[in-house]
Length: 168
Image (cartoon, rainbow, N blue to C red; front, side, top):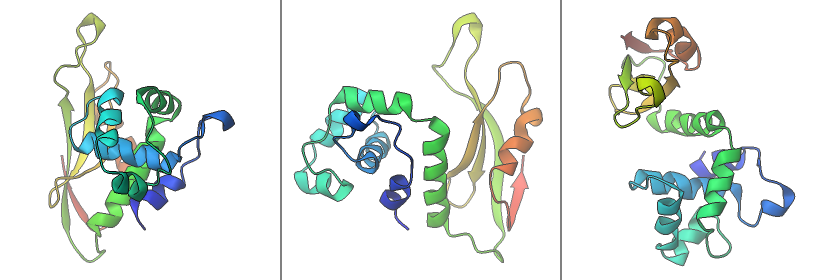
């Protein structure tokens, strides 16, 4: 199962009039842009428009890819958890964990640099990291008024931990 087929299964949050481009193509372009260092909708739109038409067609675009506002409107409407779950499903298939195989997984929290919010609070994430690949198997934004251990079980329940050795 490829990334495009997993993205195609996501329900489209756009209205009937806002569907000039395939949802899977737009999400795939967003993921490709982010993987190449794009940090916003403008950079994602520029990245995909700078590619060859063959690349556009491989992602599922049937015409010239959309502009910045199309990505912005889509990403505002699409729940982040929906996209995160789709990417997690795809990454899990890539990692191909065998039940008989012992794999190390680390549970760790990090405060993100450059995310200082009003009232002196930064964004803090609790993540589940695969030792072998360095991939994030899941993450959870922590409320500023709680400790990691209170929400760790929520994150651990969202991932199949069969055959994994967990460190924290």
